[in-house]
Length: 189
Image 1 (cartoon, rainbow, N blue to C red):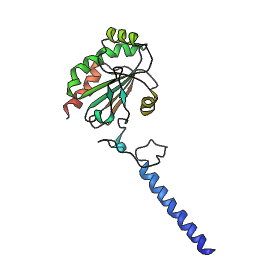
Image 2 (cartoon, rainbow, N blue to C red):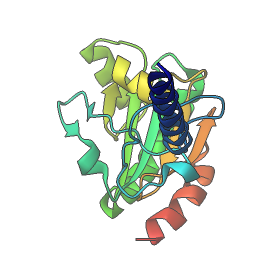
Image 3 (cartoon, rainbow, N blue to C red):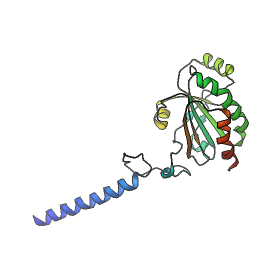
Image 4 (tube, one colour):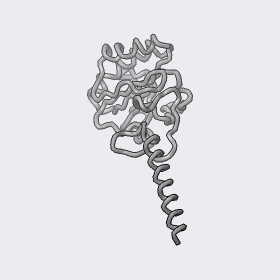
């Protein structure tokens, strides 16, 4: 009987140590106050302990073009949540389009994540009225979960070429502010 008790205590202590090590190493990329279970997943060239990484989600734009996680590697990625009814979004879109057109051939990708559901003709008219030139993706559950549904529109999140999140901004960004963030990112290859 005494041997069984000792074996049970040994097993319980071993499991406790393993769980403690597992939790302490597995939670390095998690938010404070949470515990990440399982083996941490690697994000290409992004150190999760130093900041948020571009989520490994697939984007499909309204034309059917797919932007997979692997196709985004090495690019500066700007993710902008917006809606057609949003006044600040309407003011921001022409500036974003000008900057997108300037940098799109230099490894910069804008993804406009549309949070409302206009029909195709309404969206086509909107794009024409506001000079929208960058890819538009309709929001879905995967995108909302990956980015944490924004509390305000517009919300812009900027990732460097290594997939590291540099900025998350609620509210409109001016073209000067966006340009000041992008210029050094584009220069560093």
